[in-house]
Image 1 (tube, rainbow, N blue to C red):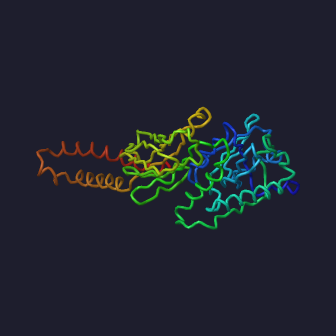
Image 2 (tube, rainbow, N blue to C red):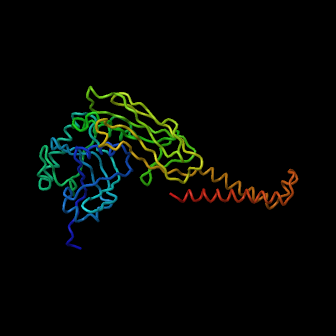
Image 3 (cartoon, rainbow, N blue to C red):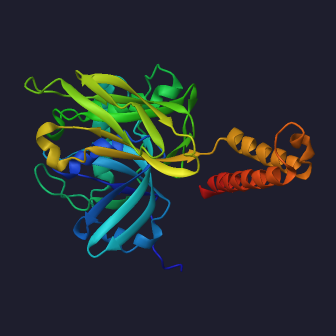
Length: 365
């Protein structure tokens, strides 16, 4: 055991800003922290030490760094935690939980300095690992261990803490706007899902909703760099599992480079205890549609309403009491005791079945 190599603190995942892989950045930035995403790399791009320790990566901290292949330049994007790493044939799969977006400074000139500083220090730190990082050339490895710690911080953020992740998202998108691949690309971010004033939590890589509730979904839309010839309007819409969720306002026309869109949904009665989904659909870049996944998938778990279960339980209690003392009702109804009891048994059977279904719903998650 003492001869085993000590593993570094982080796993660094470096996608190139090239078709089609570079467009995955849209999805990587669209999810709130707490959701799960994945990368896949051929083994030639994975560091040998990492390949030899693939089984030890679960729950390993890491971060994602975008590489502009044309300029051989690095852009830190987001923190992550590796949840599962596995090898299938010659392909390595990394499933990871998305963490904080890198906190670039709100002043663009300072953000540029932060990127330059990272490139200098990261390249020097890994001079023996990525010495082949040259403009317009492939670099290997793209997945590697590292002890380099990211310390980029926004010293000039003046907004509310609750909106800080939105600022981080906007600053990252602005930082990569001059990479040619992202010209005319629409970036979107699901900010939150809110019922009245309560924000839906994220658990088990899904939004936790409640049945029979109305929800508003707020979405940021931003095209950081647009050519004059590109159309200024685009449609953004949501698709839901209509077995359990009703769309109320499912489509928006995004106008210009930047917008905040609000969609409305309603969870159906009886939907509690069910897994479902909300899909966010948009055309990130018209001419690159074959290379870009147009749907961003958000799993949803719909929880039971406690009051519904209490109503069913009270109905069972009342039916049992009347069944034991049928004369409480027979004096007011034109029914004999036998007929009333038979009717109550049917009602009890239906109520018990519904109550058991409610309990299973609580336990299903």
